Amino acid sequence: MTSSKTPSAAEQGGALGRQLVARMGELTAQRHGALALENAARNQDFLDRGRSLAALRETPLGNGDSAVVIAAGPSLKRRDPIKAIRERNYRGCIITTESALPYCLRNGVVPDLTITLDPHATRIVRWFGDPGLDREALEADDYYRRQDMDDTFANEVKTNREVLSLLDRHGKDVRIALATSASEAVVRRVIDTGMKIFWWNPMLDDPDEPGSVTADLQRRNGLPCVNAGGNVGTAAWMMAGAVLGKQRVAVTGMDFGYYDDTPYKRTQYYNEILDCVGEAGLDTVFMRVYNPHIKAWFYTDPAYMWYREAFLEMAADADYRTYNCTGGGILFGGAVESMGIETFLDRFE
Amino acid sequence: MTSVLKGNFTPKKTVDLEPEKKDLETRFENAALKRLGGSIAFVAKKKIKWDADE
Image (cartoon, rainbow over all chains, first blue to last red; front, top):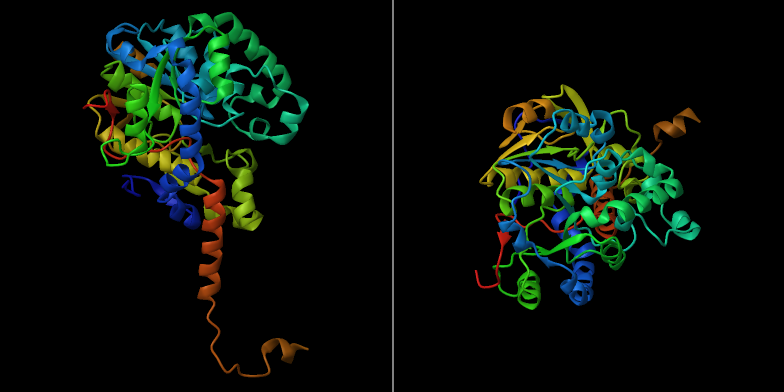
């Protein structure tokens, strides 16, 4: 299992949250395991619309042996990493999560590879533009309105129109590593916009264990199984090194936490946590972490803390170097070297 | 009134507040089980399995 301690990580509060971190794997399997398998079964009919992720092993993406992963954490708008990438005319490989794809396209950059993973039935398609978005859907889910992510997503209708247009225009230029766990809405949108699809299975359990549902899925569809580390950002980092063979991988927008001045209400799981502990109990769930590289406090929730611990474990076991160029958040220590994105680009392209 | 608030009798049993705290934690965990989670699994010590026969 993952370690609960990281060098130099001063922490405050979050006693209940800390207890939950150790159970996040179990919680995730209960919430999403069946949905991921259900989606994979339905997506079987669409596998012929793309190729296997294995095809990317023979496809050199970007110059040289470096890659930059762009995820959509709150630092994206504060640090704006694409500015440095464009100014330095970076020719290495750019990999983005689907949540950062609108940010890239809006800034005139078509990434070399985009990753999508989460099986949620209605939320993820919003990053691709949701042709079916209506008033009823907006009233039912305030997920995007609340969050401290891409500000433009707070103005939902206008942004949806903009993303629909961006993807309709650039979709045909986008390569996407499309997980078989993706929802019907995402798969339809990816196909409709003409993206080049590379299918893969996310590991849902250990494929080498008897009775593994992941192994069973792989026997049925013949696709590679990838350990996504719990989230799409980590999956993107894994693709950079273990699929594309990049030796130096920078991550940006990979906060796994929130700036200390962010109201709890603008965090991903606020409604869920509020339902569990009420207003007075919020400080027992959210954990504060001091980042000695940024010299600032950030805070996080149990899911993001779990992502962080999984990432540190995976980075320690990786055959390539990892550089966190996020400039914020709680991902540091162990095999992860922190540096500015400008330094990474100057040093490694 | 003040004397009432101070306590005007001795309880037969000592009141233990710990079970209440544990109960709160259990209720929180049970509620969290239904609401929280990541996007997908994390499998320790694994990277990629390219083929079913590996």
